[in-house]
Length: 336
Image 1 (cartoon, helix red, strand yellow):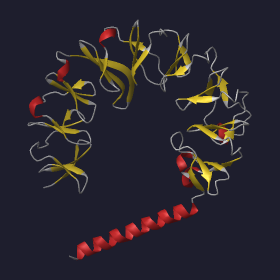
Image 2 (image 1 turned 60 degrees about the vertical axis):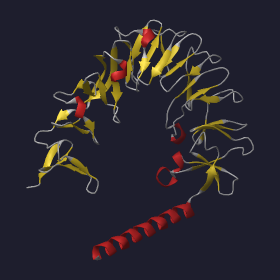
Image 3 (image 1 turned 45 degrees about the horizontal axis):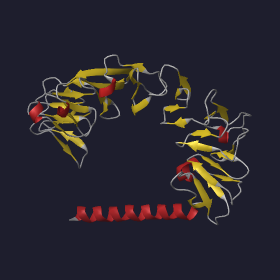
């Protein structure tokens, strides 16, 4: 009984403390509502609505704030970190010092500045707080502003070329190019995998017409599943693992998309889990799985783990069985 009372009192103190902290935060909060909540969480009106404040994600307490000198009548938010008024455009809180066509200046997908004459790339993400005499933007040379479209974070195209991370990719056919998901794309010549900052690589055996996106890391054609591996055991790989299948209806993902059942096998991060009983296999939490015979962590058998009593304790946030307590697949404490 005493323990329950102490716990209730502790919860009350914590709740009151949290409310006090929130109250102080609101009291000292230097700004009002977002200027355009749908486009940006970083541009705010002042409390009196007579000025504009830029604060990254509204986190003025940790990331600071900058009051801006703008024309309030014409100020408009273009993207999370871009805005303009009748006189100039802004990156974050600082006026852009390039010669741009202000009337047509916009930002595609939130991060690619463009006007009627040029497509631009941000020169320095810290331009707004820097003191160096550099231009905020640089022209993406050769890009046709009239037909330029930012497709995703990684790809864009105009009437002539495909651009990958602001660099022209001459190996891709612009007319037939399609992004499949965040790690695969295709054109009339083939299917490719890619990652940020790395070139596209052709998957020679992939059938272009039969490609289906499964997750951001998996695609399939009529014969194979293709799994993109960026890292494995903290090692950078940037490669694709090919897994043949017989029945496309027998491809099933678990909550952890690194786990997939393909036909009568279970794979973790593209590698088949050895000695697994598929019919009794089930996902637990935080990388742990088990079947009637074994407990697994990240696809590997945990020695001496008892599958019948292995469970997750929500009170102590630990995994244990009748004999041991486990952390990241290793025994850290014995119960006996």
